[in-house]
Amino acid sequence: MNETTYPVAPTLGERARAALGRRNLVFVGLMGAGKSAIGRMTATQLGLPFIDTDNEIERVSRMTISELFAAYGEEEFRALETRVIKRLLRTGPRVISTGGGAFINEKTRKQIERGGISLWLKADLDVLWERVNKRDHRPLLKTENPKQTLENLMNQRYPIYALADMTIQSRDERKETIVREVLEAILDYTGKGSRHEQD
Ligand SMILES: Nc1ncnc2c1ncn2[C@@H]1O[C@H](COP(=O)(O)OP(=O)(O)O)[C@@H](O)[C@H]1O
Ligand SMILES: O=C(O)C1=C[C@@H](OP(=O)(O)O)[C@@H](O)[C@H](O)C1
Ligand SMILES: [Mg+2]
Figure 1 (cartoon, helix red, strand yellow):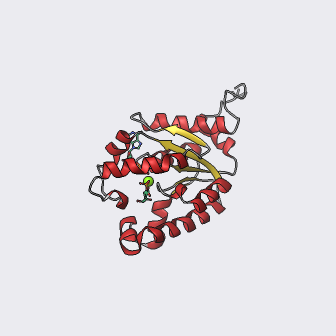
Figure 2: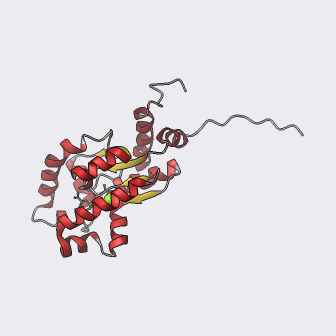
Figure 3: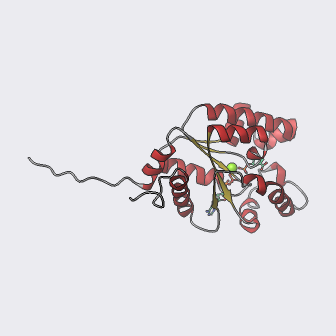
């Protein structure tokens, strides 16, 4: 029996996966930007393993992030974060969502620069606030005026997040739409997008 097979065009996820090669994709940005949620969905589309550094820190320390901050302080948490990220970047490829402070730490940022492609999920204050005020597991926001704290962090950190390889605006839009933009950004950044080649 004769069977005719037709070529199937690769999906956006498959094309982005090929463009990534052996590199890790690393999400950075402020609390509430969507790094954990969008990172996980992006990993599924890419067919790659996903790791959230906060989850990994909680797993190895057997403490929650809040407990770690309370027991040892932020400095110890950062040291642990740096070690965990260094180890994760040694192998790959995978999708790694970092906690908001990771990319701000110079040592960690250099590791990310060497071991992966970084993507800043950028968001306005109101979007961030709307998302983070629903939960209380973020120790840095346990202040008298957490929205003001968030704004101060934006002012301090946005110039540093801007050093990331790619930037996507995280906004009041379906997560699937943001994920699609992330995949397109990978193609553009690696020179495999439609702006660079004929599809
Ligand atoms: N595009 C989006 N639309 C609606 N809610 C979102 C979107 N992206 C993220 N969220 C939600 O916002 C909250 C914070 O997201 P999360 O991924 O934990 O952020 P981060 O890891 O950057 O702190 C979560 O409840 C998540 O589901
Ligand atoms: O911005 C920060 O310094 C932090 C962000 C948190 O992660 P998310 O950005 O995923 O909320 C977590 O790592 C910790 O509470 C500190
Ligand atoms: Mg997170």
